[in-house]
Image: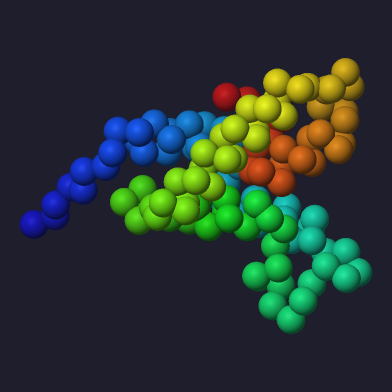
Length: 116
C-alpha cells in the first residue's frame, strides 16, 4: 500500500512557484550551465560537479521529488524564486536583446523566451 506523504502547505506553494519561475527542463539547464562553465579555466577534474552556482543547486532540486526535499532545497527554491522575480522586474530597455540580463536569468533556469 502506497502512503501519500503529507507536506507543509508552504512547501506546496514554494514548489509550485519554483516550477513556474524555473521554466526550462533540467537537461536544458544542465546544457546551458555546461556552456557557461566551459571557459578555458572553468572545468576542474570533474566537470559534472563544476557547474556554476546557483544553477547547480537549482538543477539538483529540479531532479528531486517533492517528498525528497531537504530544508536546504527549500531555501534554494526560495532564493531562486526571489532572484528570478527581481531580475524580471528589472527588465532592461533592450528587453530580450540584452544578453547579460537574459543570461543571468538562464543561469537560474528561467528563459524569458518561454511563454507561460
